[in-house]
Length: 169
Ligand SMILES: [Zn+2]
Image (cartoon, rainbow, N blue to C red):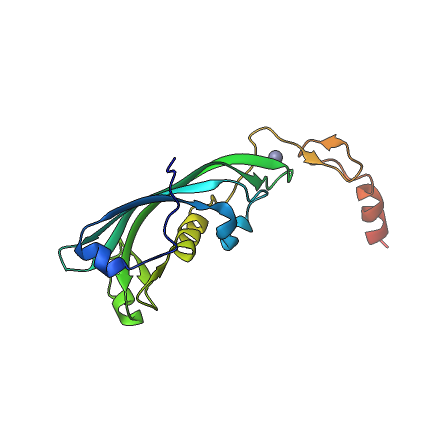
């Protein structure tokens, strides 16, 4: 856990030239997009970023951003499920769409629209990319509209016979 907050804006190209490492945390509430997938906006994302230039002199950011125990809705029962989410970063800073298209595939492009990198926006994006596509408890049951529990199982439809009868008409 990093005690200091991450600066809200950084100059990535300058940091890449200086091969800097930046660590810090971001409050979950600052990550609007990521939070919209979560059931609670309390907590901090820990961030460790390494700025460098690659062999082709591209400004690149590697490192990780992670959070433990975020609450996300189970896709089966809709109750909270607790997850650890970690983003492995391998980002190249680009200034044009054309540069983005010509990047080696191992990089995620980040189009720098200003000189500064908006860290909330950047971390928000990386965390969203790493939310599991399907999240559910291994042992939960679907709650029926009557408040009781029902296991996910095909039940014979009592009207099936009736339907068959009607269709014969
Ligand atoms: Zn569940």
